[in-house]
Amino acid sequence: MIAILPSRIAQSGYNAQTIVSEKLASADSGNPLAIGVDIGATAIKAAIVGVHGDLIETFHEPSPRTASALRDFVHSVLKCAKLPVRGIGIGCKGIIDAASSRVKSLPGDLHFLEGQLLSEVIASELPVYADNDARTALIAEVLWGAAHGRRNAVMLTLGTGVGGAVLVDGAILRGAGGAAGHLGHVTLDPRGGLCICGNYGCLETFFSSRAIESDYWAHLHRAASAKLSVGSTGHLPDTEAIFRAAAEGDESARYVLDRALEYLGAALVSFLHTFDPEILILGGSIAAAGPQLIAPIQDKIAQRSKILLGREVPIVFQKTVGYGGVAGAAGLVFLQQHFLAI
Ligand SMILES: [Zn+2]
Image (cartoon, rainbow, N blue to C red; front, side, top):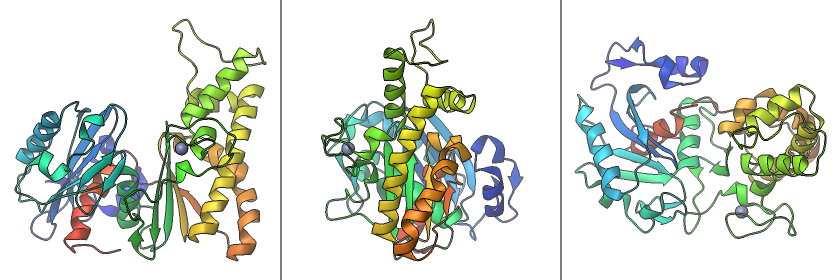
């Protein structure tokens, strides 16, 4: 049995490629197991997860394009479990009704799941629990990561879009229809650009890799001074390259990122004022920018929020990177069956 101790999760960044190396002495009945599944737009990941957040075995493949392909993947994972598992937890993009496991809204490549009950799709004898993927990422942080032991936390996953999840007084905020906590769709400018959600001027239209890349493209298009350019492949520079260019002194990259970060900072202040969290966690692909992401706006956020809150709220990075969503999905099983509590 191969596993990782919780203390190492924090040190290693929870990357499955680097952690599957340590033996846990008693990974048996003292360590209830669950299957965690994270359905992303491009890849599906799964793991057999122990109650300490240990990844016993990890699995991944390109995202399924049919319900039966999803079922086959999950059942192939189940077959690999050498010990009984307590249930299957699923994190998925879109609006998920956690009470029924129904996918209420899921545009894009995973549209085939819209309207489906994930428990019926999986068709297992084991109980199936499901929730939005930003929420499962937050659950992993609360159970085993940066927000361990906290009962009030806000998490943003910054990538192509912006995911959000909120923990209030120990409960994940889900709302009347499962849509609560979509922090990326808070309106920052009522006259702003069209957003994927149908609204205008959402946070996501100012701060996301899509927003940063299209803004940078606008600078190139207007012949502003810029070191990066559309290469021979025709691909636009990605967000990672734009952060790198800014660090190297590219003025356009700096301008674009300064502007995007100013909007992100304003939104974070609003979230602090709305939810009064103990901690604010940033995850997702853009979080890899590290200090470049948060250092420029940290002081401003602290100044703007200190009077109302009377304290500074720590802004930290996600610790359960890589397989965090998977571990958090398994966390749904442990929480529902009272092996763990927040
Ligand atoms: Zn929106």
